[in-house]
Image (cartoon, rainbow, N blue to C red; front, side):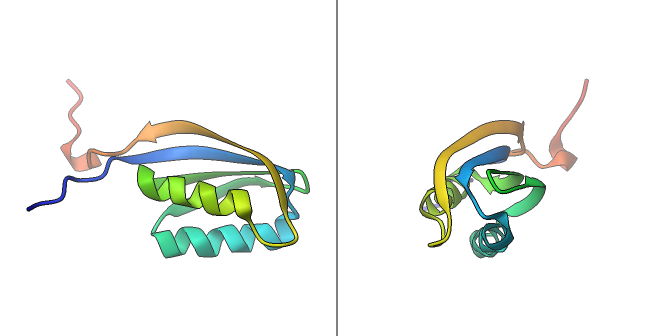
Length: 97
């Protein structure tokens, strides 16, 4: 039985709250790495962190769940997600005609 390929996305995630970015950003990096997600941080401040992550949507969901719970010194009020680019088809297989 073959497993169907998970759909992969690039999403922008905005985390709002008392996010103490000095400790939360490294925490997010570690968890995203454990899940095999690539990430690029766009903004990190005391009340907001913005990043783009890429990988299977199921793993992005897992990262969101982890971030909503976060480390002890963080309080997350809201997480917003927006699809930036569907990447389920490798670039080498994309055809522009």
